[in-house]
Length: 348
Image (cartoon, rainbow, N blue to C red; front, side):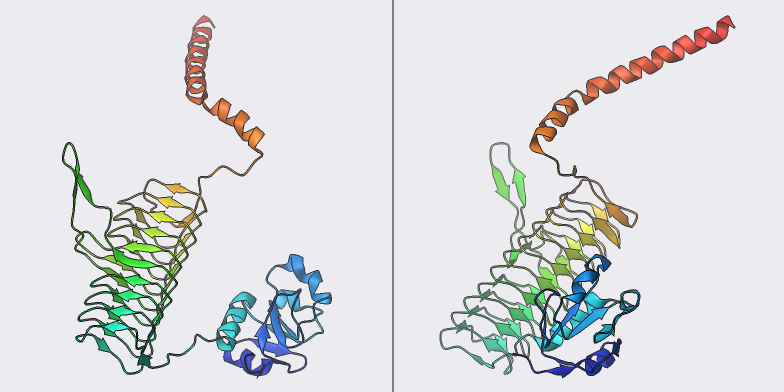
């Protein structure tokens, strides 16, 4: 259990104001299950009625939701952000336990900082450098000439192939693969010829990469993930893709090769993005959307049909099959109407 911290200290630290008793908290929890030692938060006014029955010691709210609130509370510009900051303080990432496990296989030319932790059955290749405070957990593979910055965390079974570069404070979750070959093949008339993938994967600092995500190495230039990006689980990022700083991708997104995505974008789950496109800074792509052309202006973009009963979908799909035929009939009717109107005008 984390150590208890007075809410006044938390409010001062994160730029909020506190009201009521100066409660000590040691955990965070949702409204319905929080106890007297917990901080909770309210971001949606629709759930304000739940505050009356919540046993939380402190609640973080916006100023508008604090009107008439008599229980201990914190007023924050963004209660969800305040909760996140407090949660990070209460539940920090574990620190490295310096040393190299007896079962690890580390090349003699690798440079492992004395403050780094190398876990059981880890393989570290030739010429690789691992910075202070970094942790490489069990059964992970780090290839030749890889650079890991300081305070990097590789969860179990992560694979980082040759020549990849990873910045500081990067977190990579289990079974992610960085630097595998991109999908590069040339058709030779009766078979495929493999195109060697000679670029790298370069990851900026403060990036988090989810479990089972794959980021392909570049074909010629590098695949680049910008500082502070957030990449969820089960995402495929093709060769030579560039993703800007602080962009977030939700689960099961697929990005084809050589596409460039700007900074501070949000890509919803299961969105599919074709290759050789450009998506500008600040764009929002809704979940399940197929992006087949570049996005030049910030805004929200989506293409999926709203969910509906299957029987209704079958009926609508049957009509969609005749959409082109209907469009041609409308064009013909417009021409006929134009001719009739012209004839009527001549007879007046």
